[in-house]
Length: 129
Image (cartoon, rainbow, N blue to C red; front, side, top):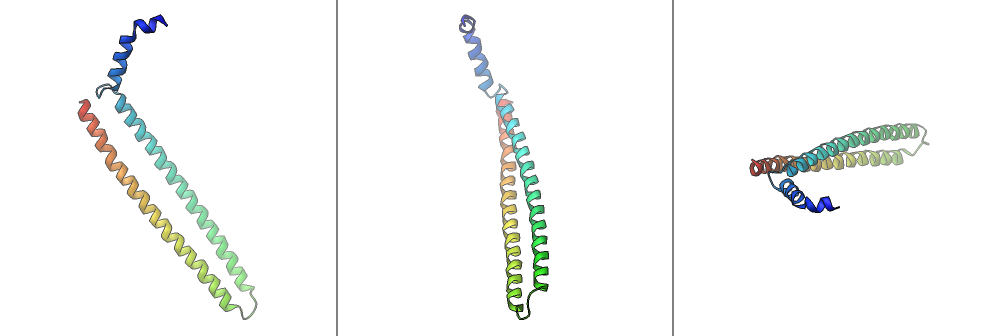
């Protein structure tokens, strides 16, 4: 414990140096943030691909079930089958519309982050230079 008090001025200098723009602490934090961002984007992309595959598989199963059901429908139920088919088609179109909107929003957010990140990286490099 006494050793820490004797070298307190050295510790203060070390912390001051690391916290200063020339210390390298800011660069390490920014590099870490960039790696975390890359991991998050990769994970989100992977989850989105899995979700899209699952949705497509589910959609194919529902359509196959509907086709089987419509073949076995009693006579005179054509209007109900047509209405159900229209409902399934419109729900698919709604999903596609929402999915495209979400992808556009994610792309815009990623673009904004990727545009800001190099600027902050360069700005910190200019101050540390």
